[in-house]
Image (cartoon, rainbow, N blue to C red; front, side):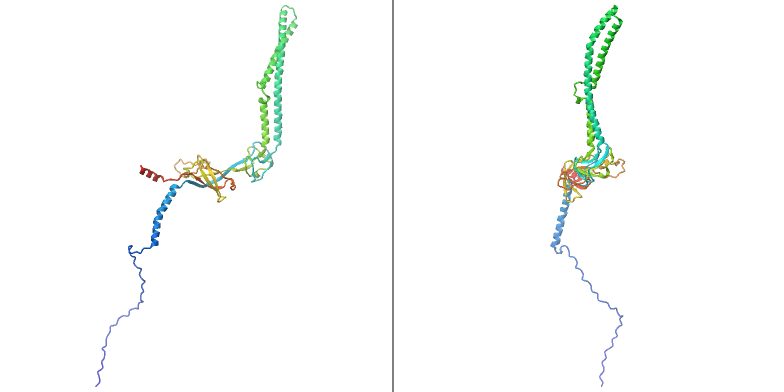
Length: 393
């Protein structure tokens, strides 16, 4: 008998829709949540850095405050230039240039000949002045001799006058009784009048001579006015001849020599060329007015010239101008209308150079930087100073 076949009951599964295949997502590891400050681990390097910052901040503030309060002692400006004595070489006599003894940019010393004028006109004038002086001497001698001669004539005439006076009086008595002729009487009268006239003329001549002698017969010739006048003319002629040779008034360097040519007619005060001093130098600085609060004459100055880096000169404040630079301009600013912008003014300061020896040569117009040691710090700002003053009160 056949064994019954065991059959597995059919299982009817429900049909499910197909789901798309998804790639597995790999998530990044999450950053650990920051712990609380109490749980943060201590970093010694970070802590030291923070401590330094906390310490350096007030130190920096204190240093800056000290720099401001204690600073301001040195007034510095680059608005400064080397200045030198500069003249236009000329002469006070007119003449034709005969020779030029120097060339352009040549260094010259005091008294060195620069150029000459033709000497002939001045030599002629000098000879004429000498002749006039001798003539004045002779004229004075003549006046003295004339005065003495007049005195002699007066004495001679006055000596004859009594004789003619007595003779006339005698004949005058005789003519009244007709004892003498009228002709003899007239001759006696004429002789008396002539003698009296001779005395008057001699006295007038003596007075004129004495007046021309200045009223003093015994005055030396060298003190007579006419002689002094002629002597002054002689000195002027000598001076003109001497000034026809033009020399350097001080040590320096000549420039623009080519502007003067031989044969040119030079009239005073027309300059021939320029002479710039190499010894009489100073610095003309123009600091701001707000920087000169504590500046005064006699303070020490440090000078640096752009042409010579690293070289330092020392000087002294010689003078401070009583007015700003703009006050001396051709058209000074007029700030009285109210429609203006306030501009800090600059005050000219003259600085004497004390140690030029052994230093490079300075030239007129070189740019410089100066530092004036005022010896006084800036101090506290005014509001803070007032506050501290009220607090102490």
